[in-house]
Image 1 (tube, rainbow, N blue to C red):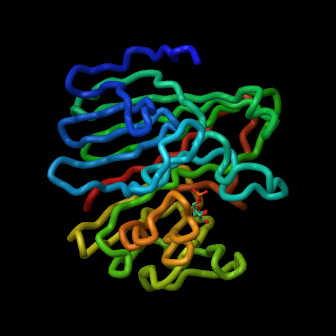
Image 2: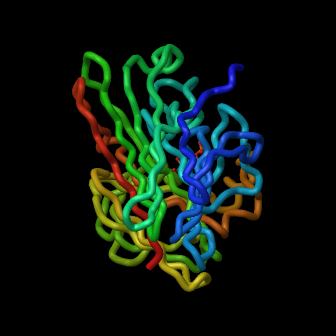
Length: 298
Ligand code: TA6
């Protein structure tokens, strides 16, 4: 395959493109406030580590790093459908773009020393064969005291389309059995481990006591992951997202995942910023939609 030419995104001592795991191209960022890594495969943020803190994102030791395969951990970028695709059992779970080769467009340092990287991917013959619409995505990742991620979806076709999306973020925790998540009190959710029944979250913080897979809808709130084991809180803010997923595979599901260690489930929790099911986005031709997730330590 011809060597892909990438624009020069090199910022001496701050950002560079190198070969990561499995030989996959990876952008390595060493900003004054934090270090991070972004694989071009899926525009996948695989690492975010504020200076002096433990890694904020979980990455499975069993993850594949293979072109066209999803990476297990970090921030999978999900578009244009979430989870299994209704009516299309042959389609890959969680859409098309998390396994595509994204292009790095630019890298720059902002006035406060944070590093902003922009990556993009567009529809092509292969995506149109699966999903008959034209799109251009830009993923804007800013690495500093917080990790700021904006997924911009542009409808570059001639007709409107409806899409789901997610920043499917895996957070690193000491022991999920001692973690609580607040911010979703009173929100309705689909409980995937109970026949996708629609339920309402009570006032108490969410605690993980078994496989947990809940898609909360019609909620724009900030979530806080309280991790006493690491004596920290992780704050997950969002904009233009009306759904949030909370997921931990627990024991049996972990064993069933080939790219996830059987004993890794206590060390992670997903709090995902999405627009899914009834919160899917209708986008008219020529329009753009920007969903943001901002992660910081409290
Ligand atoms: O976001 C939770 C979820 O939809 C779970 O149901 C589980 O399937 C998880 O995503 C991981 O999906 P993946 O396709 O990456 O194995």
